[in-house]
Image (cartoon, rainbow, N blue to C red; front, side):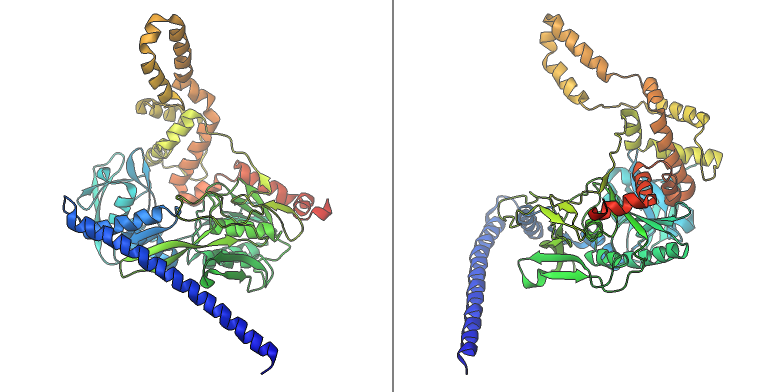
Length: 544
């Protein structure tokens, strides 16, 4: 045996010994501290003054432990696993209703196509008063939705309140509902296709492939991929979608954590579905997270397309689901995502307590394939930032309370409009009367603080006219005439009314289509995509 071989074997044996000792020390730490946890648990169970539920105490201890880590490490029990199942299986047992809370009522936003709810005649705008014998007014939306869901073949009774009719009871048989991730795909104009993706689940890549093939068959020269408000989902789905746009064997994303199992990298595996000559724009905002940021970040780092909108959320942590038994799952952060330039997506200061420390490096400046400078500061910064105008007070409050949708549902039932809809002056007058009847309290920012200030200074104001005058000026500032506000905000009100009226008439697709002419982010993307010089020079600094 040569000296070099002996040396190699000795080094290998030494490394194995170091790893073994390190693991041994770790297990000793786990064993030692677990005994302490067990002793506390046992002492509480046996000696606490009141009777203790052992399962709830154990869950509280686990939740308390995870609460010291990050917002995404959670303990899931039974029905808490619904969203995880939707992502990994792509379906769930239910009746096929998109729900929201509008004006403090659980409201049907839309029944899904060919679902038990649609076949039974449940309509957009219907209010769900009860699920079986449980009043929805006594539950939050998640609790009500959980009672509506259930195993395929089981029954659920929904009490529906509809404008102008007596309450109706629908007895529905649950079926397997397939989640739809692509909420819209089609051509915006003669040469630009548009796809809106709402989440990344098991179904996403298949739906995207179908949508992109359709756009390719329509000879789309530009494609807009809208990921605004997309909270993410499965990383594998994001990788497969990037694969459709980039050349084969290109780095897309990597993962890095403390264990060997968490060290992985992913490359594109197939030739691009979309020809490289097709220009691409990805739309993002503060609601675009996780898998959305992988797609947008990879497109940006690989200089495959432009990114338009506002800074994304900044969630670059990888969660792994550890199945503990038939009903309980630990979903825990095990690694971090890095996009092709080496940037970390995760925004800093995500740790909640001091039991863990952030070991990320300090590098913040990176470059794309073409040498463009990109910054790692959490999330994805668009190539073109489009500032969104703030929604004014009356419009914001009417939207928050679901009054545009509520009015639209009622108006449609009475007038049977067709899409595309035009908001007439008569509709606006009717909506103004509708708002009058609702007696909206605008609750402006600062109003609560002013109320407290008036309470604190009430005695002083009685004796000092200067204080009383100052409070009066502030009070007048916050006390606005609603009719005057309606006229000042007429354009914003008309726009929001058009959106929700379109939604009620033609579903989500119609609502999306109604935004094509006036959505500033879409308009910016169209402008850059149509200007080849601006598009190419953005992606390649050498062309400037």
